[in-house]
Image (cartoon, rainbow, N blue to C red; front, side, top):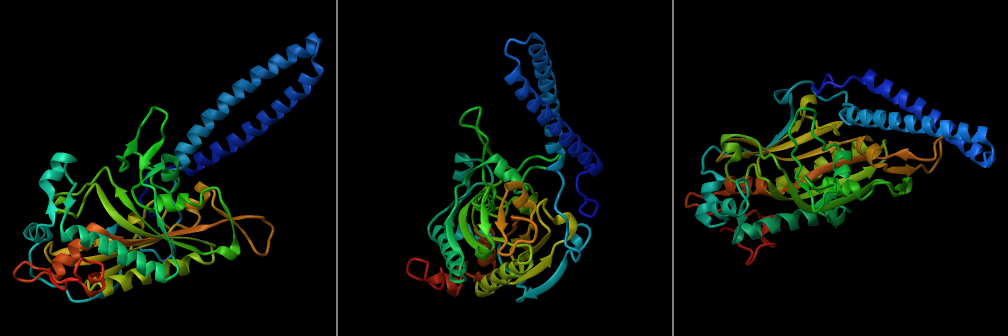
Length: 402
């Protein structure tokens, strides 16, 4: 937590709560056993009946105490982040380690909003009337370009053996929290909560990672099945778009967007290799799209609660005249698996019948930002845009320039 500059959580206090919960739970179990024994003997025996009433009061007091302790324990424990890989840089975003840079950095050109308006591919004004700021309509070839990117990413992952999944966009809030998406203490939530009635605990998924992880919740897998690799398509919803100035302009920070997500469940011995595999797939896709990008090993203060290690990929965006994040991939080790009870049964038992899995996630395509990078990278002086070769077959008429 210190390396991450994470919100302060007293680990000793959490341990004390855990120990107190165990004492209370054991005491409660003992009292319940005594009550059951007395209930069998107490028929017509005033003394035993009185003892049973006293036990009932003690049980009720312990139940209330246990509920209070468990509530405080959960509130504190969910704020504890994952451990970090020993090679992860320490500190803020500026300490990110550049692993590689691919391509040349174009220095001229219009920004994506001007290009989209000239091409007639976007309607921000009507979207603001219909849904509010940071929403958009993509239309014409803009809509088809989004679908082309989704098809390309799904096809790429499927060719590598990933199982294709269309994910639900509404999930139970405890599933999202189990993936590490609960807000830190003192921070505003990025989650859109859904309340069809007062008892609902539902929210809109901030990424397909959440329903993909939830697909394995409370499951016990066989070690021979692992790693299991999935590629999911869904909409991502972010309540706090954040950012200022150019950050909020156009498609860069929006409340809703399409996203293709890589996800895997593995053993502890496999997860580091799967993380590198995800990164390799991402680099291959962005190279085939012809983008200029760099790969960063992200420092401790940039890791989400669940991430043990995270790589970001940033594309050069000439119109914005800066780098912009288009992808990331994280090894969450057993952080999510423990909270969602995702286990596997070892082929060869070594004292334990089941072990917790590791989970790995990675963005294959976050559509709006990749559209920005494509438009600003391949724009021509007349405002037309060259279409990357790998996307043309997914577009009506298979155009090379639009």
